[in-house]
Structures are given as C-alpha cells and as structure tokens.
Image (tube, rainbow, N blue to C red; front, side):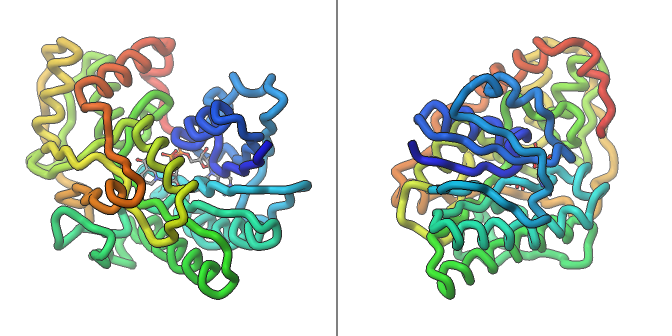
Length: 319
Ligand code: NAD
C-alpha cells in the first residue's frame, strides 16, 4: 500500500484529498495544527485502519516513521480573513513548513506536490493568466504575506528539484469552492451563501465588475491527482476558466436560493485583484484535465451542504 502524507488535512481542500486518496487505496497520514481547519472535516475517516492523524505544526520539524511515497503540502491559511489575522504563521508555513516538507521528501525519496495559488499572479496585468506570466504582486501590501510566501514556496521547491533531484510538483490553484468551506472565511462565495441563508442583504465590494472564476472541489482534486502521478515538475494552473463578475454571481446566488434580499455595495479592500481567470491549456495538454462540473450544479451542491448544517453554523464568527 502506497503511503501519502497530507499536510493541512483538516482543512477544506486537505480533507477532500484525504477522501480521494483513501478511495484510491492509499495509506493516508494526515497532519494539521487546526489553526484554521476543523477535525469535523475528517472525523469520518478516524475509524479506518489506513488513516492516521497527527496534530502538528509543520513549520516545526516533521518526523514520520516508515516509508513515504508522496507528500501533498496543503497546510497554510488560505483566505484573506485568516492570513491577515495570522500573517507571521502564514509566512512561516509557506517558508519553513515547505522547507520541512521538502527535507522530508528528500530523506524518504518521496515525490512532493505543493499547493501554490493564483495569488502568485497578484493583480494580473495579463489576462487570462498562463503559467509563463510572472505576476504583479505588491510585496509590502497586506496580501504580500500570503502571495510572497507562496512565491517563495515555488522557488524553494524548484531548488530542491534541481539541486537535490527531489521529485516535485507545483499546482497553482485558482478559486475553489464546495462542501466543507467555512461560511465565515470571508471569500465571496460562502459569504453570499451565508448572507442568503441568514436572510441578510448580499455585500459586494467595489462596483461588482471585478471577476472571479470558481472551480468545484471535485474537479480540482482530480487535477491534483493527475498532476501528482504525472512526471511534470513545472507549475500547472488548475481552475475553471468560466469567468463571472461578482455582481452577476451575487444574482446567481439570489436566484438559486429564491431569496428576495438586496445586493449592497461597499468599498473595495486594498490590493483586491480585479480579474482572475486561469489559462488551463497546460493542464489540458499534459494531464488531459479540464473541469467537468458547471457552476450551476456545483453551486447547488454547495448550497445544499450549507443548508444542511445546524443553523448555529450559519451565525458562527471566524476563529
Ligand atoms: P483551509 O484553511 O481550509 O485549510 C488549511 C489547513 O492547513 C487548515 O486545516 C489549517 O489548520 C492547516 N494549517 C495551517 N497552518 C498549519 C501549520 N503550520 N501546520 C499544520 N497545519 C496547518 O484552506 P484551504 O482552502 O483548504 O487551502 C488549502 C491549501 O490550498 C492552502 O495551502 C492554500 O494556500 C491552497 N489554496 C487554496 C485555494 C482555495 O480556493 N481554497 C486556492 C489557492 C490555493
């Protein structure tokens, strides 16, 4: 049985990756310090023999006994509301956490995939963004703690590949959504759904003309699985190129929920990207991957998940 370490396993994406690797017959070693994650996301796996969980901060030395075939490094605060609150931990997990995971991969002869992000493109001057674009990031802006941590993550991963011959993969993840997101994580999609569930007006920042493209979590997991098992070490965008303005998206959420509340507009936060759309030609060519779940279907599945939660969850404040 192949053994995979998943860091950030109790988070939104990490927990879906645990499910997928268990389903594929792997032994999954899950690691998380629960700074933004929740054990509820993986508690259904606890009784399985091929699953183990370690409560550990990956920015500190990582010890795993026995063999390891793969590492998926997903530990990191991911939404602005989190990384603006814990900027130093965010920089540390992108820098020291990644260094520790790469060292472990080298020691075990494991292949490692690191979770990078479309945020490395910053507020892009090129649209849509292909992997060849170097980005437009403000290193000293508030979002720099996340963007630069991930840019460093990519650099050190490439260095371990070329200098130590470690098998590495880099996925640049674009906005992803689905069950197990947190309603209060500050991102547009759960924020709109949370407001709709509570019967509040939907808040759009700016004039709502800024665009996003949302990828359903199952599509993302499929892309990551294919990338890990490929032999491609340069960064690959995984996301859904179907772009929508936030104003139109808010209207879609209202239509889905049948809600009669209004859309209200507030000032745009500093350095908020105006456009985001992945160019996924590389993923199509190299991995034979493209997203399959359209927004209408994914949104419905996500809304049903949030609706099924106890009502107290709809009102929960961020950690
Ligand atoms: P999340 O906050 O739900 O999950 C992150 C997990 O990492 C949490 O369980 C948290 O407790 C854990 N963690 C954070 N710091 C840690 C540390 N030092 N040691 C151990 N565990 C730690 O976020 P997510 O949306 O699941 O994102 C997962 C990864 O994917 C992140 O690396 C993020 O940068 C990347 N990503 C996500 C998206 C997205 O749309 N969700 C987009 C781009 C990149």
